[in-house]
Amino acid sequence: MSLPRIAIDAMGGDEGVRVMIDGAALARRRHDRFKFLLVGDETRIKSALESHPNLRASSEILHTEGVISGEEKPSQALRRAKGTSMGKAIEAVKLGHAGAAVSAGNTGALMAIAKLSLRTMPGIDRPALAALLPTLGDNDVVMLDLGANTECDSRNLVQFAVMGAAYARVATGREQPRVRLLNIGSEEIKGTDEVRDAVAILRGAASDLSMSFDGFTEADKICRGEVDVVVTDGFSGNVALKAVEGTARFVADLLKRGFSSSLRSKIGFLISRPATELLKHHLDPNNHNGAVFLGLNGIVVKSHGSANAAGVANAVAVTARLLEENVTERITADLARLGGSTLRMPRVQEESA
Image 1 (cartoon, rainbow, N blue to C red):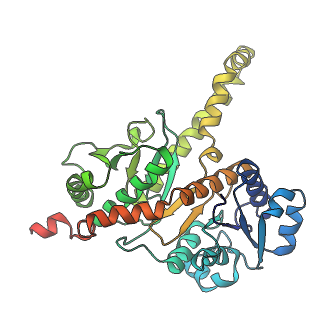
Image 2: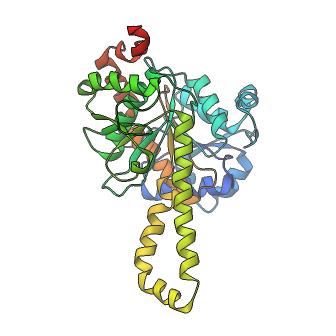
């Protein structure tokens, strides 16, 4: 059975058309149920499709010449979104011409256009950007928000937890995802009023949401495999994500420098190559590519701007799985179980004041 079409912003990303088309073609070879709406300059897309007859046969082209640049402010992008590949890809989701959209373009612009066009789901105040990070455990960890909302109150954090748990059930297969809020310590007295209030709400609601909730986690435990969903505001989440990515690059560069420092080190590298290749694969961001804007009336996935074809293919695979597992409907069902009231209650301290 075919899935709904996936709209691809073919003009986004550092490499533009070539990598986006190569990635879609790779995804199509792996999963022949995928169908695409390729949005962008028709001439350039057709040229890129010449070497991918299988993708060409399963795709339709929606022509537009406008492109959102990486330097554009969200406000600028919004004003001319209708004539751009990013704007038209999201509009296709809104109109039902595609089931989801994938773009490697400007993150801020993508968030702004998607939010204005698709609107947030009932019961959700703000959408959140969620991604999968590798861990030492059996499953990846879902982390949100990663930059869509720099400031969040307790209600936003609770809503992020609901959305993150629904996504984790799809991505990891765990029926009771282990959800924690990111904090500067695990003790209940630590952190801002917002995170402490969110913990109080979630402790009372977790049993209705099919999640295992037990308070806080610290940044050094994000990738230990001890938690399935890490919830935080977009400012802290983006800083933590960049720190994790930077540490991974640091370790990889340090190993590279060490193994090339002497003849003995080079011999050691040859002996340990299987282990280093495994490390390289585990830390390669292309293998975990595809961040999701959760909380919208439609599925929008952000690919890394620097992703290669394999990375784009992984972002497409994430998109397809979200469609297949009806993640939007799962979030709606969780919200309905709470009747919306718990998620929209005032902050605990304000209520008691």
